[in-house]
Image 1 (cartoon, helix red, strand yellow):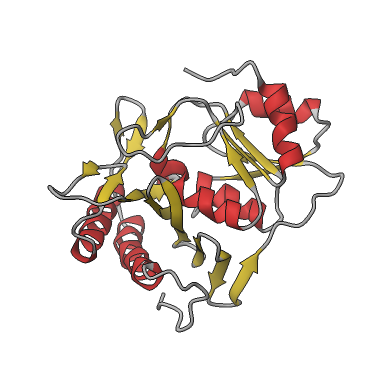
Image 2: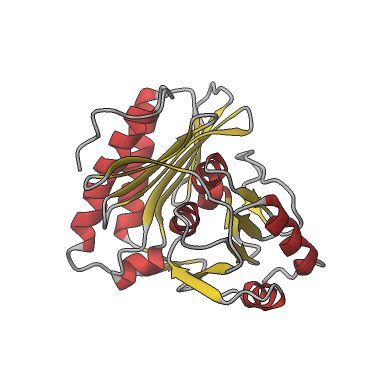
Length: 278
């Protein structure tokens, strides 16, 4: 996909990062269309050549433009120049590797930027379907598809029909339990954290709960700024904020995304004391 001529963000890195994501997508799509093998990190997390090659490509492209930025990626850890500034990139080369392996199309490239510990820019790009989501601090959340052009995503007030976003590959019993207590009846299944939150921003679900203690900064950096700029709430299951310190990138207290603060507080109240999966 070509970079859209008009980008509705003034952020100085937006155009370059969109181009990086599109070029990484070409690498991923070539592997996706052929035969590939699946390996496992730490005995349980799947990884493919597409994850690793996309990761290296994104690191290289960001490093060429930003020699003094730190880069934390899922597949290659912390890339730290000898003299660095207060900018940190968080890369998930394929969010939803399990869905990539299944060839469901529900996976995305995620690139987030934090400046001084605060999220400043985020991108989620779904190669299959050509759905691009970008956001910058104070500039809103935007969705681009070649068929429909740019649309600003703003979360609408929820109705009485409460819908829970759930993972296809990693079910969360705590989420189902909370959903029952809130008398929720709707369920929206989708792969990848970023795509779930973007589906919520598009009005397809109202909240998402993940009780895992294994969420990393690269899993949520880009989706968080996108979802917050659309008007949503993101926190851990105790209602706390996530840290974007590259030296402490493990988020051990679950993940909650809700379309409004009232729903977020209801979930925090029902979920505590925390029940984090080992």
